[in-house]
Image (cartoon, rainbow, N blue to C red; front, side, top):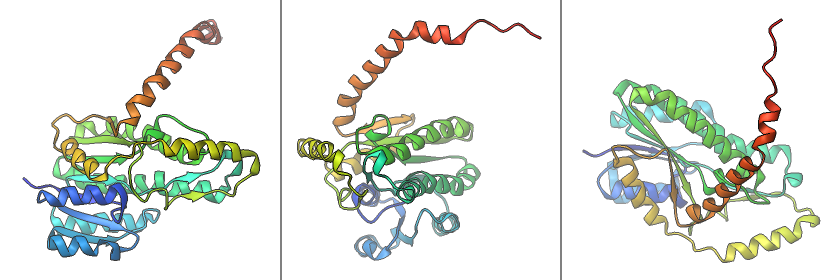
Length: 276
């Protein structure tokens, strides 16, 4: 049976690949974007299988209206993909309040509004699958990405709690954690005003970025189909080769540090206080 998708950030990047993968096998998609002109080719190719919706996910009222329209148009919602987002690059000291708030409004609050709008419909129909597009940067962090990491780490914690809250309703949650892909993501990023004292880090990061083996967005789209079709999908899954390689060492280091400082952890607990 074909599925009905609601996908945010559908105009380009991984979001576009997710939409194209779903449509290619006969599914139906409510595809949202800030500018629906970018969705014209999808409508031409797939006709009524696509419902283009203009949406800024930071507008809570518009999110609820778009989800409602999608449900009314297709009759149900099976897969909700929170993909809309962008990267904010700059040292923590360089970030303005506005830049950080805007990052959280899109990457975190936008996802919250979509979840809150979709849950009543998913619960009423007896199930569904929420896909939260996080990042390898949602489970580890690098210099110059503090604002972006803050948004994705928050999404990770929120989604893990959400998965436990709605499991009894038959609604599944999966955090997709992509590495680097050959998309326009860098072009859409926001860069804080540079402080020269961090120029060395910027040069080092640029050199590191040149070494990355960029993934194929179309492959990510095909992989997501397997996630949404799985009877028992994972709560977290890496997309790409970088995540597992990088996090093996990150978690080894964390476990070692916690073990090294376990005596202090016990000391910090203290003695059981006497009742007064």
